[in-house]
Length: 344
Image 1 (cartoon, one colour):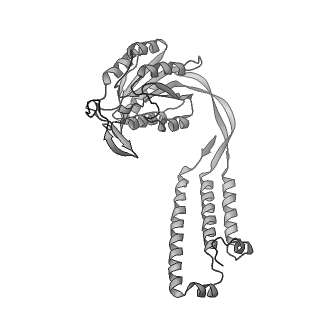
Image 2: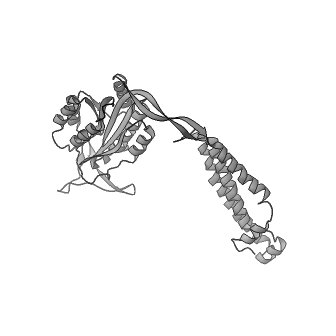
């Protein structure tokens, strides 16, 4: 486990490409001026120690030194001691619809991206709760098991897309059934399932399955993304819309938010339906829901001791600068032997 203490210093790395651009510009300018001054053979006699390779080597060494010093400022730390700590929280599973209808752009930037934004912001507001992620379309699949690692949760969340399953549809029933298996540990705390979907093309008797989940102590809250007016489903290639999805009659498919089924699921499972249009409103409602739930104590492993690693990068940066100042400023024999650009 590693930790980056001062990430803001990574912005200093932008100085490296700027330095390279200036260096290339300087080389071009010098070449132009030299050609105006004298021909190639005469320049060799007048300035026998000229070396493009040496200049390139110097800029590479300086760039590496700068990169090392920037990383030293960031101060990466490595966890060295893993401890078991007591925490109180709720087990929260997010079931996210990844069917093709979630590509509709009736809510910016599109329904799926909106769903991921909502879940990300909810995770950012959690304290000590555990999270899990499920993806579903025509079938459901586990994306992330119950964990306290929010960083991994957000990473797996961003990787979700509509190509993760070949079967299309909205199998909310399968998502609920899979969620039940996330809570099969007796030590797990209160059980909450958030279903984020447009509710369209649902399959199976969802209400009865939601009721069964409620009987097992799972509260289901649904978040609707999309609009009831709806919109077409764009089919893109390299981020550019090629066409819109059509039905068997050749008509453009208009997909619409179906809040009715989502409201029914929430009611059957002792939860509520939340309109996903406004991100802040959703996050506030979810935060209030979780804060008002009874917390149960559970054990979790986490790194309690981190050791600084900046000294390694600082040492490497200073070593490279030392190499540049005391070796590359002179015409050394090993540089002559390298002569990668056939300058002599």
